[in-house]
Image (cartoon, rainbow, N blue to C red):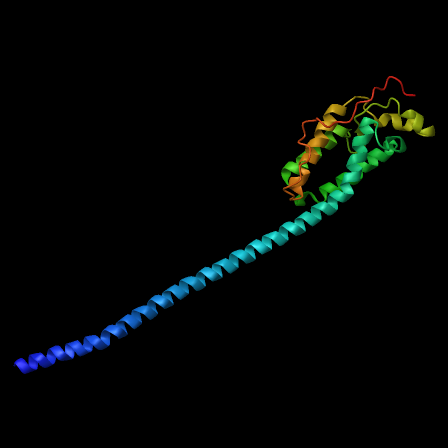
Length: 216
């Protein structure tokens, strides 16, 4: 009986000495496999996130290029309209018909690409055009320039009588300037440039308002 018990204990000890390393090895392998799976999943997730970020960055770059290309065409037209209101720059070389045609060109360009711009930027564009022009009252009417015809006729030649109706004969320069500065103030954000500081739209950078009492 004692011999049998002793043999059983020895077998148990031997079994334990064999099973324990195997169990430890198995647990170690299971733990390593689990950790490897966690690491692999983490690496896959990181790869997916990098791909998403790269895709978004490429999309931002394409959007910036589209907007910049459009604004390169729009900027000179906007500037000519702005300068015409303030009697600065090349305004003497421009007729009222030129200014109205620039408005048409701008509206075609901007409205056909409206989906590429933010609502804030496009609202700023609309406000600038609203302050610069009085819209036609009907479909056969013509927009008018919200400025005074005074001091302009000397540069029109024989077309003075035809062009006078294209003016509202008001001085809206203050509002035109504020609207233009707000539009410019949106530009850096619209083009996704974060480190460019542009006028904040407070009207502080308006051109000098020349008095038109003497048109000489």
